[in-house]
Image 1 (cartoon, rainbow, N blue to C red):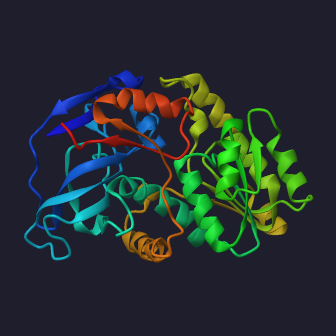
Image 2: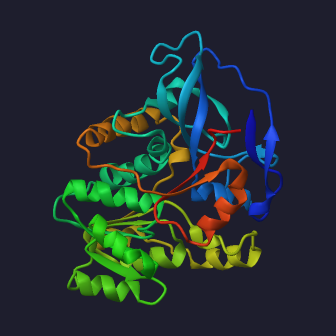
Length: 341
């Protein structure tokens, strides 16, 4: 089989192809012949030695994939060879074959193609749990999405629309027309406009009820100021530590000093809340992930969730793929194609 690995820490060009033996599934595992693997920003951070907990090079990457089951373990009862599936896969989905616990595998919805299946698990579960489980979204509320044109952002738009809430999105200006077609009411070009001023203008000084923010310290500080009473700021990443294509210690140090310190006593008096979310750290809470997936599938059945796929690269183009995302060229999800070796 073929795998895309980080040969060493560094720019996109450190991604290389490695030949390996096809693994045998354990008793509770399935062997999937991967068709597509989803690309996520966390994998870019892992390549740059900016993602705590990632394995050291040389190592595979990837958190989600879709494909067809080739073998099942002796204790597997829910799947059989030939089933089309989508799956979580911790640091391993950039590969033609993967073995995954059956608990992390889900039948491909009938209305999804396999490329849509690879664009679904991580970003939609992340968006769903932030918006519904932590955010407790309600009809008529106002939500600010940072990075609205990214994979999690486009998933969040669909889920927030389903909940009947209004959306403000930040992104590069060229994405605004596409965002408005998806249902974003107000768009802010974070490169040219003051996000705080525009949010307060759009909400007539009230602020927003929910913010999902993967950006970092300065944005979190401004976000807290933009919250309406009972508002919630949910942080799920710190993309500001990624500057250029290599790890930069000065950027890390600068970001460390911009992270705000929230005072619980002040939060109590202001009726505001700050929460963190990290799907990869939800150990011993797999039942909550399964619950989110079950509820998500009910929304999928309504036809209201359609993964937005920007571009598909062949797996041999993995360096170009990572560079494409880092240069903010994508609108929605980017995939690697493993169908042809």
